[in-house]
Image 1: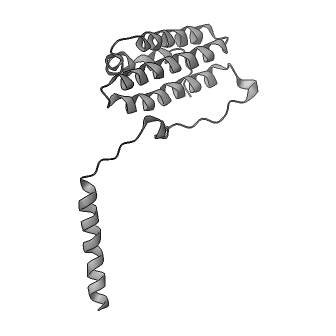
Image 2: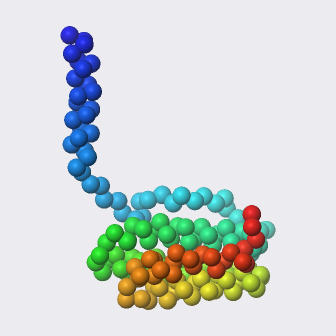
Image 3: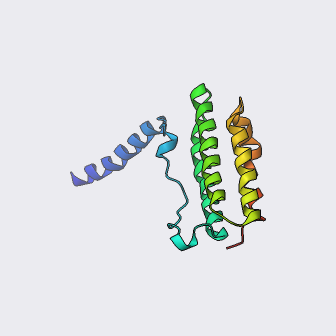
Length: 147
């Protein structure tokens, strides 16, 4: 008898897996964890280019994760989600720019923020995700010291 029960267990698992294979799971963009972790900036380091750059790259990474969730939609809700995400990233980059005294970094952050602000006002924000957003972070590369 125990032998039959052990044989039935793998069969039940295979059947469950086969049934689950046809299912689709929908995940909201806000529920996806961001694959980036940054320790809090020490207060004495606020505005230091190394920390500002880390924060800026984190803003872009967090935003990219949020954008990915909206890219699968075709309706106005998805387009508005893309626009809101671009505007949010631009605002956060502006706050980082205001906190640094490095002129090159401040200018680079401003350029990225301007691009994101323009994207937030586009009729088709998906076009920017598939175009300019792919390289917008490179505008920070020259101003950010390598780690």
